[in-house]
Image (cartoon, rainbow, N blue to C red):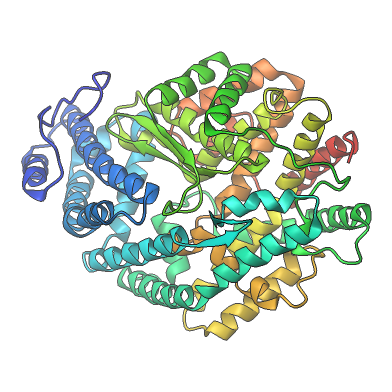
Length: 568
Protein backbone atom coordinates (compact mmCIF):
# COMPACT_ATOMS: atom_id res chain seq x y z
CA UNK A 1 0.00 0.00 0.00
CA UNK A 2 1.12 3.52 -0.70
CA UNK A 3 2.06 6.09 1.91
CA UNK A 4 -0.66 8.47 3.12
CA UNK A 5 1.06 11.16 1.05
CA UNK A 6 -0.11 9.39 -2.11
CA UNK A 7 -3.42 7.68 -1.24
CA UNK A 8 -5.00 5.30 -3.70
CA UNK A 9 -7.83 6.65 -5.83
CA UNK A 10 -8.57 3.63 -8.01
CA UNK A 11 -7.35 0.52 -6.18
CA UNK A 12 -9.03 -0.36 -2.90
CA UNK A 13 -6.77 0.78 -0.02
CA UNK A 14 -6.67 -2.65 1.60
CA UNK A 15 -5.97 -4.64 -1.56
CA UNK A 16 -2.54 -6.32 -1.69
CA UNK A 17 -1.81 -7.07 -5.34
CA UNK A 18 0.29 -10.17 -4.83
CA UNK A 19 -1.91 -12.74 -6.63
CA UNK A 20 -3.47 -12.52 -10.06
CA UNK A 21 -7.00 -13.05 -8.78
CA UNK A 22 -6.84 -9.67 -7.01
CA UNK A 23 -5.10 -7.95 -9.92
CA UNK A 24 -7.25 -9.05 -12.87
CA UNK A 25 -10.43 -7.13 -11.89
CA UNK A 26 -8.58 -3.83 -12.13
CA UNK A 27 -7.37 -4.58 -15.64
CA UNK A 28 -10.93 -5.58 -16.54
CA UNK A 29 -12.31 -2.28 -15.24
CA UNK A 30 -9.80 -0.26 -17.24
CA UNK A 31 -10.42 -2.36 -20.33
CA UNK A 32 -14.20 -1.86 -20.12
CA UNK A 33 -14.18 1.87 -19.39
CA UNK A 34 -15.33 4.23 -22.15
CA UNK A 35 -12.82 6.79 -23.42
CA UNK A 36 -15.03 9.34 -25.13
CA UNK A 37 -13.49 12.64 -24.07
CA UNK A 38 -9.97 13.88 -23.25
CA UNK A 39 -11.07 14.08 -19.62
CA UNK A 40 -12.02 10.39 -19.74
CA UNK A 41 -8.58 9.55 -21.11
CA UNK A 42 -6.76 11.62 -18.50
CA UNK A 43 -8.59 9.97 -15.61
CA UNK A 44 -8.06 6.55 -17.20
CA UNK A 45 -4.32 7.19 -17.59
CA UNK A 46 -4.01 8.20 -13.95
CA UNK A 47 -5.82 5.05 -12.80
CA UNK A 48 -3.78 2.89 -15.17
CA UNK A 49 -0.62 4.47 -13.75
CA UNK A 50 -1.77 3.75 -10.19
CA UNK A 51 -2.32 0.09 -11.03
CA UNK A 52 1.08 -0.29 -12.71
CA UNK A 53 2.79 1.45 -9.78
CA UNK A 54 1.19 -0.94 -7.30
CA UNK A 55 2.30 -3.93 -9.37
CA UNK A 56 5.80 -2.52 -9.86
CA UNK A 57 6.10 -2.09 -6.12
CA UNK A 58 5.38 -5.78 -5.53
CA UNK A 59 8.06 -6.77 -8.05
CA UNK A 60 10.58 -4.24 -6.74
CA UNK A 61 10.12 -5.32 -3.15
CA UNK A 62 10.66 -8.97 -4.01
CA UNK A 63 13.68 -8.18 -6.18
CA UNK A 64 15.24 -6.03 -3.47
CA UNK A 65 14.75 -8.68 -0.82
CA UNK A 66 16.16 -11.39 -3.10
CA UNK A 67 19.31 -9.40 -3.95
CA UNK A 68 19.82 -8.53 -0.29
CA UNK A 69 20.09 -12.26 0.45
CA UNK A 70 20.39 -14.44 -2.66
CA UNK A 71 20.81 -17.62 -0.63
CA UNK A 72 17.42 -17.23 1.10
CA UNK A 73 15.15 -19.78 -0.61
CA UNK A 74 11.93 -18.09 0.56
CA UNK A 75 12.98 -14.78 -0.97
CA UNK A 76 14.03 -16.45 -4.20
CA UNK A 77 10.72 -18.32 -4.34
CA UNK A 78 8.74 -15.12 -3.84
CA UNK A 79 10.72 -13.35 -6.59
CA UNK A 80 10.21 -16.27 -8.98
CA UNK A 81 6.51 -16.26 -8.14
CA UNK A 82 6.32 -12.69 -9.40
CA UNK A 83 8.32 -13.58 -12.51
CA UNK A 84 6.21 -16.64 -13.31
CA UNK A 85 2.70 -15.87 -12.06
CA UNK A 86 2.23 -12.10 -12.07
CA UNK A 87 4.51 -10.41 -14.59
CA UNK A 88 3.67 -12.72 -17.54
CA UNK A 89 -0.06 -12.14 -16.99
CA UNK A 90 0.39 -8.41 -16.53
CA UNK A 91 2.23 -7.78 -19.79
CA UNK A 92 -0.51 -8.90 -22.23
CA UNK A 93 -3.15 -7.03 -20.26
CA UNK A 94 -1.01 -3.88 -20.24
CA UNK A 95 -0.56 -4.31 -23.99
CA UNK A 96 -4.33 -4.53 -24.35
CA UNK A 97 -4.72 -1.26 -22.48
CA UNK A 98 -2.00 0.40 -24.55
CA UNK A 99 -3.86 -0.59 -27.71
CA UNK A 100 -7.08 0.79 -26.21
CA UNK A 101 -5.32 4.11 -25.68
CA UNK A 102 -3.91 4.26 -29.22
CA UNK A 103 -7.32 3.45 -30.72
CA UNK A 104 -9.20 6.06 -28.69
CA UNK A 105 -9.70 9.14 -30.85
CA UNK A 106 -9.97 11.25 -27.70
CA UNK A 107 -6.34 10.47 -26.88
CA UNK A 108 -5.32 12.63 -29.82
CA UNK A 109 -7.07 15.61 -28.20
CA UNK A 110 -4.91 15.59 -25.07
CA UNK A 111 -2.66 18.66 -24.55
CA UNK A 112 0.55 17.91 -26.45
CA UNK A 113 2.78 19.83 -24.06
CA UNK A 114 1.74 17.45 -21.30
CA UNK A 115 1.16 14.16 -23.11
CA UNK A 116 3.33 14.12 -26.24
CA UNK A 117 6.20 12.20 -24.60
CA UNK A 118 3.82 9.68 -22.98
CA UNK A 119 1.91 9.21 -26.23
CA UNK A 120 5.12 8.53 -28.14
CA UNK A 121 6.19 6.00 -25.52
CA UNK A 122 2.91 4.09 -25.47
CA UNK A 123 2.78 3.82 -29.25
CA UNK A 124 6.37 2.56 -29.36
CA UNK A 125 5.57 -0.01 -26.67
CA UNK A 126 2.63 -1.29 -28.71
CA UNK A 127 4.82 -1.59 -31.78
CA UNK A 128 7.43 -3.78 -30.08
CA UNK A 129 5.18 -6.01 -27.95
CA UNK A 130 4.59 -9.68 -28.83
CA UNK A 131 2.68 -12.24 -26.74
CA UNK A 132 5.14 -14.95 -27.68
CA UNK A 133 7.98 -13.00 -26.09
CA UNK A 134 6.44 -13.00 -22.62
CA UNK A 135 7.50 -16.59 -21.70
CA UNK A 136 10.90 -15.97 -23.29
CA UNK A 137 11.37 -12.91 -21.09
CA UNK A 138 10.50 -14.99 -18.03
CA UNK A 139 13.18 -17.47 -19.05
CA UNK A 140 15.57 -14.56 -19.61
CA UNK A 141 14.88 -13.19 -16.11
CA UNK A 142 15.56 -16.58 -14.57
CA UNK A 143 18.93 -16.79 -16.31
CA UNK A 144 19.75 -13.29 -15.10
CA UNK A 145 18.91 -14.38 -11.57
CA UNK A 146 21.30 -17.33 -11.93
CA UNK A 147 24.04 -14.85 -12.75
CA UNK A 148 23.23 -12.95 -9.55
CA UNK A 149 23.21 -16.16 -7.55
CA UNK A 150 26.64 -17.16 -8.85
CA UNK A 151 28.02 -13.72 -8.02
CA UNK A 152 26.49 -13.74 -4.57
CA UNK A 153 28.17 -17.07 -3.78
CA UNK A 154 31.66 -15.98 -4.81
CA UNK A 155 33.78 -15.81 -1.65
CA UNK A 156 37.39 -16.66 -0.84
CA UNK A 157 39.36 -17.31 2.31
CA UNK A 158 41.92 -14.54 2.39
CA UNK A 159 43.87 -12.82 5.15
CA UNK A 160 42.61 -15.42 7.61
CA UNK A 161 38.88 -15.11 6.98
CA UNK A 162 36.16 -15.73 4.42
CA UNK A 163 35.50 -12.62 2.35
CA UNK A 164 33.33 -11.60 -0.58
CA UNK A 165 35.09 -10.44 -3.73
CA UNK A 166 33.74 -6.96 -3.00
CA UNK A 167 35.45 -7.04 0.39
CA UNK A 168 38.76 -7.84 -1.30
CA UNK A 169 38.62 -4.41 -2.94
CA UNK A 170 40.28 -2.89 0.13
CA UNK A 171 43.50 -4.76 -0.67
CA UNK A 172 43.82 -3.06 -4.07
CA UNK A 173 45.01 0.05 -2.23
CA UNK A 174 47.51 -1.64 0.10
CA UNK A 175 51.06 -0.37 -0.23
CA UNK A 176 52.40 -3.95 -0.02
CA UNK A 177 52.56 -4.92 -3.70
CA UNK A 178 52.72 -8.65 -2.99
CA UNK A 179 49.58 -8.43 -0.85
CA UNK A 180 47.81 -6.55 -3.64
CA UNK A 181 48.84 -9.21 -6.12
CA UNK A 182 47.72 -12.03 -3.82
CA UNK A 183 44.31 -10.42 -3.31
CA UNK A 184 43.86 -9.76 -7.02
CA UNK A 185 44.86 -13.33 -7.85
CA UNK A 186 42.49 -14.72 -5.22
CA UNK A 187 39.54 -12.78 -6.63
CA UNK A 188 40.47 -13.57 -10.22
CA UNK A 189 40.95 -17.29 -9.55
CA UNK A 190 37.57 -17.44 -7.84
CA UNK A 191 35.81 -15.68 -10.71
CA UNK A 192 37.44 -17.94 -13.27
CA UNK A 193 36.12 -21.00 -11.45
CA UNK A 194 32.68 -19.94 -12.68
CA UNK A 195 33.68 -18.92 -16.19
CA UNK A 196 32.20 -21.99 -17.89
CA UNK A 197 28.91 -21.65 -16.00
CA UNK A 198 28.75 -17.96 -16.93
CA UNK A 199 29.59 -18.70 -20.56
CA UNK A 200 26.74 -21.24 -20.60
CA UNK A 201 24.32 -18.66 -19.21
CA UNK A 202 25.47 -16.04 -21.69
CA UNK A 203 25.12 -18.37 -24.66
CA UNK A 204 21.54 -19.03 -23.61
CA UNK A 205 20.86 -15.33 -23.15
CA UNK A 206 22.20 -14.49 -26.60
CA UNK A 207 19.99 -17.14 -28.21
CA UNK A 208 16.92 -16.06 -26.24
CA UNK A 209 17.39 -12.41 -27.06
CA UNK A 210 17.84 -13.18 -30.74
CA UNK A 211 14.53 -15.07 -30.69
CA UNK A 212 12.83 -12.18 -28.92
CA UNK A 213 14.09 -9.79 -31.60
CA UNK A 214 12.94 -12.06 -34.40
CA UNK A 215 9.48 -12.37 -32.89
CA UNK A 216 9.24 -8.57 -32.88
CA UNK A 217 10.20 -8.42 -36.58
CA UNK A 218 13.58 -6.86 -35.85
CA UNK A 219 16.69 -7.72 -37.84
CA UNK A 220 18.68 -8.38 -34.68
CA UNK A 221 18.61 -7.74 -30.96
CA UNK A 222 20.39 -4.40 -31.33
CA UNK A 223 17.51 -3.12 -33.44
CA UNK A 224 15.07 -4.54 -30.91
CA UNK A 225 16.90 -3.02 -27.95
CA UNK A 226 16.94 0.46 -29.48
CA UNK A 227 13.18 0.25 -29.98
CA UNK A 228 12.49 -1.34 -26.60
CA UNK A 229 14.63 1.25 -24.81
CA UNK A 230 12.86 3.94 -26.81
CA UNK A 231 16.03 5.59 -28.00
CA UNK A 232 14.18 8.17 -30.02
CA UNK A 233 16.94 10.75 -29.95
CA UNK A 234 20.00 8.82 -31.15
CA UNK A 235 20.96 5.83 -33.30
CA UNK A 236 23.53 2.98 -33.38
CA UNK A 237 25.62 5.13 -35.71
CA UNK A 238 25.71 7.87 -33.04
CA UNK A 239 27.03 5.28 -30.57
CA UNK A 240 29.72 4.22 -33.00
CA UNK A 241 30.68 7.89 -33.43
CA UNK A 242 30.96 8.10 -29.63
CA UNK A 243 33.32 5.09 -29.64
CA UNK A 244 35.49 6.88 -32.19
CA UNK A 245 35.44 10.11 -30.16
CA UNK A 246 36.57 8.24 -27.04
CA UNK A 247 39.36 6.53 -28.93
CA UNK A 248 40.55 9.87 -30.23
CA UNK A 249 40.03 12.17 -27.22
CA UNK A 250 40.32 9.95 -24.16
CA UNK A 251 42.38 6.81 -24.75
CA UNK A 252 45.67 8.74 -25.20
CA UNK A 253 44.98 10.60 -21.93
CA UNK A 254 44.34 7.34 -20.07
CA UNK A 255 47.54 5.80 -21.39
CA UNK A 256 49.51 8.90 -20.43
CA UNK A 257 48.07 8.83 -16.90
CA UNK A 258 48.94 5.17 -16.57
CA UNK A 259 52.47 5.81 -17.83
CA UNK A 260 52.87 8.50 -15.16
CA UNK A 261 51.56 6.03 -12.57
CA UNK A 262 54.05 3.41 -13.72
CA UNK A 263 56.91 5.88 -13.52
CA UNK A 264 55.86 7.15 -10.10
CA UNK A 265 55.60 3.61 -8.74
CA UNK A 266 59.01 2.77 -10.19
CA UNK A 267 57.87 -0.57 -11.59
CA UNK A 268 59.03 -2.26 -14.78
CA UNK A 269 55.50 -2.92 -15.96
CA UNK A 270 52.12 -1.75 -14.72
CA UNK A 271 50.12 -4.74 -13.51
CA UNK A 272 46.37 -5.07 -12.79
CA UNK A 273 47.02 -4.81 -9.05
CA UNK A 274 48.87 -1.48 -9.45
CA UNK A 275 45.92 0.66 -10.51
CA UNK A 276 44.48 1.77 -7.16
CA UNK A 277 47.46 2.05 -4.81
CA UNK A 278 48.74 5.50 -3.89
CA UNK A 279 51.77 6.26 -6.06
CA UNK A 280 53.62 7.86 -3.13
CA UNK A 281 53.20 4.82 -0.93
CA UNK A 282 50.81 6.49 1.45
CA UNK A 283 48.30 4.38 3.32
CA UNK A 284 44.96 3.86 1.56
CA UNK A 285 42.31 6.48 2.06
CA UNK A 286 39.98 5.26 4.76
CA UNK A 287 36.86 7.40 4.49
CA UNK A 288 34.91 5.43 7.11
CA UNK A 289 35.13 2.40 9.36
CA UNK A 290 31.48 1.44 9.71
CA UNK A 291 28.32 1.77 7.67
CA UNK A 292 27.00 4.09 10.38
CA UNK A 293 29.95 6.42 9.77
CA UNK A 294 29.41 6.21 6.03
CA UNK A 295 25.79 7.32 6.44
CA UNK A 296 26.60 10.11 8.89
CA UNK A 297 29.35 11.55 6.72
CA UNK A 298 27.30 11.20 3.55
CA UNK A 299 24.46 13.08 5.22
CA UNK A 300 26.78 15.96 6.10
CA UNK A 301 28.13 15.98 2.55
CA UNK A 302 24.67 16.09 1.00
CA UNK A 303 23.68 18.92 3.35
CA UNK A 304 26.72 20.87 2.12
CA UNK A 305 25.66 20.34 -1.49
CA UNK A 306 22.09 21.40 -0.72
CA UNK A 307 20.13 21.35 2.57
CA UNK A 308 16.98 20.04 0.90
CA UNK A 309 18.82 17.07 -0.56
CA UNK A 310 20.53 16.41 2.76
CA UNK A 311 17.14 16.26 4.46
CA UNK A 312 15.94 13.74 1.89
CA UNK A 313 18.89 11.46 2.61
CA UNK A 314 18.17 11.75 6.33
CA UNK A 315 14.61 10.65 5.61
CA UNK A 316 15.95 7.58 3.82
CA UNK A 317 18.06 6.69 6.85
CA UNK A 318 15.18 7.19 9.24
CA UNK A 319 12.91 4.94 7.16
CA UNK A 320 15.53 2.20 6.56
CA UNK A 321 15.62 2.74 2.81
CA UNK A 322 19.28 1.63 2.75
CA UNK A 323 21.14 -1.72 2.68
CA UNK A 324 24.80 -0.82 2.36
CA UNK A 325 27.15 -3.40 3.89
CA UNK A 326 28.76 -6.28 1.95
CA UNK A 327 28.06 -9.79 3.26
CA UNK A 328 27.99 -13.38 2.10
CA UNK A 329 24.94 -14.21 0.03
CA UNK A 330 24.30 -10.61 -0.98
CA UNK A 331 24.22 -9.93 -4.72
CA UNK A 332 27.22 -7.94 -6.03
CA UNK A 333 27.09 -4.34 -7.18
CA UNK A 334 24.94 -1.41 -6.24
CA UNK A 335 21.68 0.13 -7.40
CA UNK A 336 18.87 2.49 -6.51
CA UNK A 337 15.36 1.06 -6.77
CA UNK A 338 12.09 2.97 -6.58
CA UNK A 339 9.06 1.73 -4.69
CA UNK A 340 6.66 3.13 -7.25
CA UNK A 341 3.47 3.25 -5.21
CA UNK A 342 4.95 4.64 -2.01
CA UNK A 343 7.18 6.76 -4.28
CA UNK A 344 10.32 6.42 -2.25
CA UNK A 345 13.85 5.31 -3.21
CA UNK A 346 15.92 2.43 -1.88
CA UNK A 347 19.72 2.18 -2.11
CA UNK A 348 21.54 -1.16 -2.29
CA UNK A 349 25.34 -1.47 -2.30
CA UNK A 350 28.29 -3.44 -0.93
CA UNK A 351 30.34 -1.08 1.25
CA UNK A 352 33.71 -2.32 2.52
CA UNK A 353 35.39 0.91 3.65
CA UNK A 354 37.08 2.23 0.49
CA UNK A 355 36.78 5.49 -1.42
CA UNK A 356 34.76 3.78 -4.15
CA UNK A 357 32.02 3.20 -1.59
CA UNK A 358 31.73 6.93 -0.97
CA UNK A 359 31.34 7.51 -4.71
CA UNK A 360 28.77 4.74 -4.98
CA UNK A 361 26.59 6.09 -2.18
CA UNK A 362 26.76 9.65 -3.52
CA UNK A 363 25.99 8.33 -7.03
CA UNK A 364 22.98 6.31 -5.90
CA UNK A 365 21.99 9.25 -3.73
CA UNK A 366 21.68 11.30 -6.93
CA UNK A 367 19.23 8.73 -8.26
CA UNK A 368 17.32 8.86 -4.98
CA UNK A 369 17.05 12.65 -5.15
CA UNK A 370 15.73 12.26 -8.70
CA UNK A 371 13.02 9.97 -7.32
CA UNK A 372 12.05 12.53 -4.69
CA UNK A 373 12.09 15.41 -7.19
CA UNK A 374 9.65 13.78 -9.61
CA UNK A 375 7.50 11.81 -7.15
CA UNK A 376 4.49 14.15 -7.27
CA UNK A 377 3.65 13.44 -10.91
CA UNK A 378 0.50 11.32 -11.32
CA UNK A 379 2.03 9.41 -14.23
CA UNK A 380 4.39 6.58 -13.35
CA UNK A 381 6.06 7.08 -16.73
CA UNK A 382 6.91 10.66 -15.78
CA UNK A 383 8.29 9.83 -12.32
CA UNK A 384 11.50 8.58 -13.90
CA UNK A 385 13.51 9.69 -16.89
CA UNK A 386 15.33 7.85 -19.66
CA UNK A 387 18.54 6.34 -18.29
CA UNK A 388 20.65 8.73 -20.34
CA UNK A 389 19.36 11.54 -18.12
CA UNK A 390 18.80 9.50 -14.97
CA UNK A 391 22.55 9.03 -14.85
CA UNK A 392 23.07 12.79 -15.16
CA UNK A 393 21.31 12.97 -11.79
CA UNK A 394 23.77 10.52 -10.24
CA UNK A 395 26.99 11.55 -11.98
CA UNK A 396 26.06 15.20 -11.51
CA UNK A 397 25.68 14.61 -7.78
CA UNK A 398 29.13 12.98 -7.64
CA UNK A 399 30.67 16.06 -9.22
CA UNK A 400 28.68 18.60 -7.20
CA UNK A 401 29.71 16.76 -4.02
CA UNK A 402 33.37 16.50 -5.01
CA UNK A 403 34.31 19.76 -3.28
CA UNK A 404 32.32 18.92 -0.13
CA UNK A 405 34.01 15.75 1.09
CA UNK A 406 35.77 17.24 4.11
CA UNK A 407 33.75 15.01 6.44
CA UNK A 408 35.38 11.99 4.80
CA UNK A 409 38.88 13.38 4.24
CA UNK A 410 41.20 15.98 5.73
CA UNK A 411 44.28 17.81 4.51
CA UNK A 412 46.00 16.33 1.47
CA UNK A 413 43.53 13.43 1.55
CA UNK A 414 40.96 15.74 -0.06
CA UNK A 415 43.26 16.35 -3.02
CA UNK A 416 43.98 12.62 -3.29
CA UNK A 417 40.28 11.82 -3.28
CA UNK A 418 39.56 14.47 -5.90
CA UNK A 419 42.37 13.24 -8.15
CA UNK A 420 41.10 9.68 -7.87
CA UNK A 421 37.59 10.78 -8.77
CA UNK A 422 38.66 12.83 -11.79
CA UNK A 423 41.00 10.14 -13.09
CA UNK A 424 38.13 7.69 -12.64
CA UNK A 425 35.90 9.83 -14.83
CA UNK A 426 38.49 9.82 -17.60
CA UNK A 427 38.92 6.08 -17.23
CA UNK A 428 35.18 5.45 -17.42
CA UNK A 429 34.81 6.65 -21.00
CA UNK A 430 37.01 3.95 -22.60
CA UNK A 431 35.29 1.27 -20.50
CA UNK A 432 31.86 2.51 -21.61
CA UNK A 433 33.00 2.46 -25.22
CA UNK A 434 34.40 -1.06 -24.76
CA UNK A 435 31.22 -2.48 -23.19
CA UNK A 436 28.96 -0.77 -25.71
CA UNK A 437 31.05 -1.75 -28.74
CA UNK A 438 31.17 -5.33 -27.42
CA UNK A 439 27.39 -5.45 -27.32
CA UNK A 440 27.07 -4.06 -30.83
CA UNK A 441 29.22 -6.99 -31.98
CA UNK A 442 27.48 -9.63 -29.85
CA UNK A 443 23.97 -8.86 -30.98
CA UNK A 444 24.59 -8.10 -34.65
CA UNK A 445 26.53 -11.39 -34.85
CA UNK A 446 24.32 -13.68 -32.73
CA UNK A 447 25.82 -16.88 -34.17
CA UNK A 448 29.30 -16.03 -32.93
CA UNK A 449 31.31 -18.74 -31.16
CA UNK A 450 32.86 -18.41 -27.73
CA UNK A 451 36.29 -18.13 -29.33
CA UNK A 452 35.09 -15.34 -31.60
CA UNK A 453 33.50 -13.57 -28.66
CA UNK A 454 36.71 -13.76 -26.68
CA UNK A 455 38.80 -12.60 -29.65
CA UNK A 456 36.57 -9.60 -30.23
CA UNK A 457 36.72 -8.67 -26.57
CA UNK A 458 40.51 -8.76 -26.70
CA UNK A 459 40.53 -6.63 -29.86
CA UNK A 460 38.47 -4.00 -28.04
CA UNK A 461 40.97 -4.07 -25.20
CA UNK A 462 43.70 -3.31 -27.73
CA UNK A 463 41.64 -0.40 -29.02
CA UNK A 464 40.44 1.14 -25.76
CA UNK A 465 42.67 -0.34 -23.06
CA UNK A 466 45.60 1.18 -21.27
CA UNK A 467 49.18 -0.06 -20.82
CA UNK A 468 48.48 -2.65 -18.12
CA UNK A 469 50.46 -5.89 -18.55
CA UNK A 470 48.41 -9.12 -18.22
CA UNK A 471 51.27 -11.52 -18.98
CA UNK A 472 50.55 -14.90 -17.30
CA UNK A 473 46.99 -13.76 -16.62
CA UNK A 474 45.58 -13.92 -20.12
CA UNK A 475 42.39 -15.66 -19.02
CA UNK A 476 41.69 -12.92 -16.49
CA UNK A 477 41.72 -10.40 -19.32
CA UNK A 478 39.82 -12.61 -21.75
CA UNK A 479 36.94 -13.08 -19.31
CA UNK A 480 37.07 -9.70 -17.57
CA UNK A 481 33.70 -8.84 -19.09
CA UNK A 482 32.03 -11.43 -16.84
CA UNK A 483 32.26 -8.88 -14.02
CA UNK A 484 30.03 -6.43 -15.88
CA UNK A 485 26.55 -7.36 -14.72
CA UNK A 486 24.93 -5.13 -17.36
CA UNK A 487 26.01 -7.54 -20.08
CA UNK A 488 24.05 -10.32 -18.43
CA UNK A 489 21.14 -8.50 -16.81
CA UNK A 490 20.41 -5.32 -18.77
CA UNK A 491 21.68 -5.71 -22.34
CA UNK A 492 22.55 -2.54 -24.22
CA UNK A 493 22.39 -0.55 -21.01
CA UNK A 494 25.83 1.06 -20.76
CA UNK A 495 26.26 3.73 -23.41
CA UNK A 496 23.94 5.73 -21.16
CA UNK A 497 26.79 6.18 -18.69
CA UNK A 498 28.93 7.87 -21.31
CA UNK A 499 26.12 10.11 -22.55
CA UNK A 500 25.13 11.04 -19.02
CA UNK A 501 28.71 11.68 -17.93
CA UNK A 502 28.94 14.32 -20.65
CA UNK A 503 25.79 15.96 -19.31
CA UNK A 504 27.05 15.79 -15.72
CA UNK A 505 30.41 17.30 -16.67
CA UNK A 506 28.58 20.22 -18.25
CA UNK A 507 26.58 20.70 -15.01
CA UNK A 508 29.86 20.67 -13.10
CA UNK A 509 31.47 23.13 -15.51
CA UNK A 510 28.49 25.45 -15.00
CA UNK A 511 28.78 25.11 -11.21
CA UNK A 512 32.36 26.37 -11.32
CA UNK A 513 31.08 29.66 -12.73
CA UNK A 514 27.78 30.01 -10.81
CA UNK A 515 27.13 27.27 -8.27
CA UNK A 516 23.68 28.43 -7.18
CA UNK A 517 22.41 28.72 -10.74
CA UNK A 518 23.86 25.35 -11.79
CA UNK A 519 22.36 23.62 -8.74
CA UNK A 520 18.97 25.22 -9.38
CA UNK A 521 19.01 24.07 -13.03
CA UNK A 522 20.06 20.57 -11.98
CA UNK A 523 17.21 20.29 -9.47
CA UNK A 524 14.67 21.77 -11.89
CA UNK A 525 15.65 19.24 -14.54
CA UNK A 526 15.31 16.39 -12.04
CA UNK A 527 11.80 17.57 -11.18
CA UNK A 528 10.77 17.11 -14.83
CA UNK A 529 11.19 13.34 -14.47
CA UNK A 530 10.47 11.82 -17.86
CA UNK A 531 7.91 14.38 -19.00
CA UNK A 532 10.24 15.91 -21.61
CA UNK A 533 12.50 14.58 -24.36
CA UNK A 534 16.16 13.89 -23.72
CA UNK A 535 17.37 17.05 -25.48
CA UNK A 536 14.88 19.08 -23.42
CA UNK A 537 15.97 17.46 -20.14
CA UNK A 538 19.63 18.14 -20.89
CA UNK A 539 18.80 21.74 -21.81
CA UNK A 540 16.89 22.20 -18.54
CA UNK A 541 20.01 21.05 -16.67
CA UNK A 542 22.14 23.53 -18.59
CA UNK A 543 23.75 20.97 -20.90
CA UNK A 544 23.73 20.06 -24.60
CA UNK A 545 22.54 16.61 -25.62
CA UNK A 546 25.53 15.78 -27.74
CA UNK A 547 28.22 13.12 -27.45
CA UNK A 548 30.49 13.85 -30.35
CA UNK A 549 34.21 14.61 -30.22
CA UNK A 550 33.43 18.35 -30.29
CA UNK A 551 31.63 18.08 -26.94
CA UNK A 552 33.82 15.40 -25.37
CA UNK A 553 37.28 16.83 -26.04
CA UNK A 554 36.85 20.20 -24.23
CA UNK A 555 35.41 18.46 -21.16
CA UNK A 556 38.36 16.06 -21.01
CA UNK A 557 40.65 19.08 -21.33
CA UNK A 558 38.83 20.70 -18.40
CA UNK A 559 39.47 17.62 -16.25
CA UNK A 560 43.12 17.59 -17.32
CA UNK A 561 43.52 21.23 -16.30
CA UNK A 562 42.01 20.42 -12.91
CA UNK A 563 44.36 17.44 -12.49
CA UNK A 564 47.35 19.62 -13.36
CA UNK A 565 46.58 21.71 -10.26
CA UNK A 566 46.42 18.69 -7.95
CA UNK A 567 49.47 16.95 -6.49
CA UNK A 568 50.07 13.31 -7.31
